[in-house]
Length: 244
Image (cartoon, rainbow, N blue to C red; front, side, top):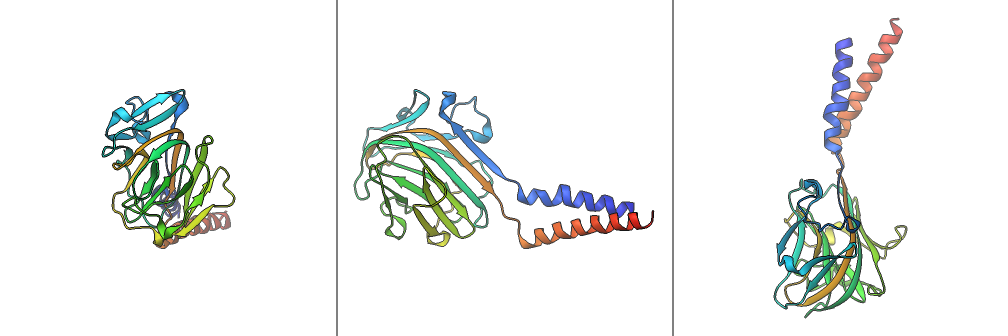
C-alpha cells in the first residue's frame, strides 16, 4: 500500500505537471537595455534581424526609426518551444506611434506571435490597428479599430483563449476586435516578435514594455492521468486511515 501511495505522489507531482508548464517572456525599457542586450537572461533576450542601426534606447524606451524604403529591422525570439494551436496565451506591448509611410496597407509597426500554424500578428498605424495578413498588405477579415495611436503610449494586448483571439487597448475588460483563431492566416514560423519595421516603407515609433505569457492546455489524456493519480492518493489515504 505504501508503494502505491509513493507511485501516486510521483505521478501527480512529477509527470503530470510537465504538460502544463507556463512560459513568460518579457522586456522592460526602464532597464535601459536593448531587448537584444547580452546581459539579459537568455529566456527573455531577443535577436536583432537585419538593420540593428534602426534601434536605439532613448529615455527608458526603445525607439525604432526605419528611414530607408526597402530595408527593415526585426526583433524576434525563435529559440522557444512550439506554440501549439491548443495553447492559451497573450502578448502585450506599450507603444507610441510617431510617424510612418508604407505603400498598399499603410502601417508603422507589426508585432506579436507566429505559432506553429497561424500568423497572430497585429499592425499599428497612426489611425488604426488590426490583425495582419501574412504579407502585411491586408487585414484579417478586413476589420480594423480606428484610434489615434500618436497621442501617447497605449497598451495593446492580444489574447488567445481556446478558439478566440481578442485585441484590447488600454483596458482588458472589453476587446476592440475579436476573431476566430481559424480566421488567422497559416504560418509555421513559431516565433515571438517584439517589434519590426516594413521593408517597403519607413517608420518611427517607441516601445516601453513587452510581455508574452503562454499556458499550454493539457490534452484530455493528461487530465485523465492527473485525475487517476489524485484518486489513487485518495484511495491510499482512505485505506490507511481505515486500517489504523
